Image (cartoon, rainbow, N blue to C red; front, side, top):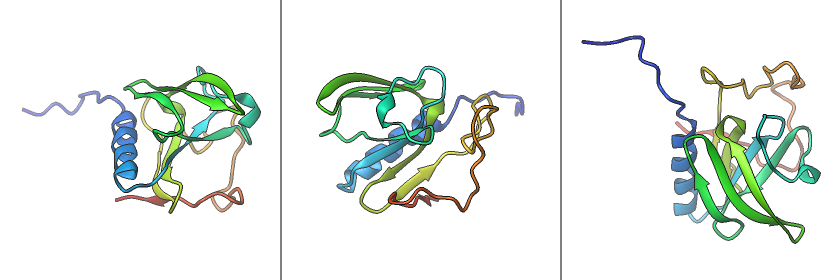
Length: 141
């Protein structure tokens, strides 16, 4: 018997954990792109650009990394100043390897804001606009 109305939890935490492990297993550095405007995000605001922040979450860069089902938490130093970082999972827009850009950009999920700027206060960005100096991301299938 099949129930088509089964509500699934977000797949994002499972994908972030799996991709983080995959990136580390391949001796690369995992970076996450975070929407700093999502409620509950606690990151160093002086490093936020265009409403986003890119964070290195490798074992050498952070302490006490926990990728839970609701949030990512860790402590890190920014400019020598220690900080506890808290990122609700819906604020994670992408995870990729610094060395080659391999990773995943997350699309919208039911109950989560659209990472493509679908929120009322998020500026619309054209698909062909890309910040310079950052690696490109490729969809992993």
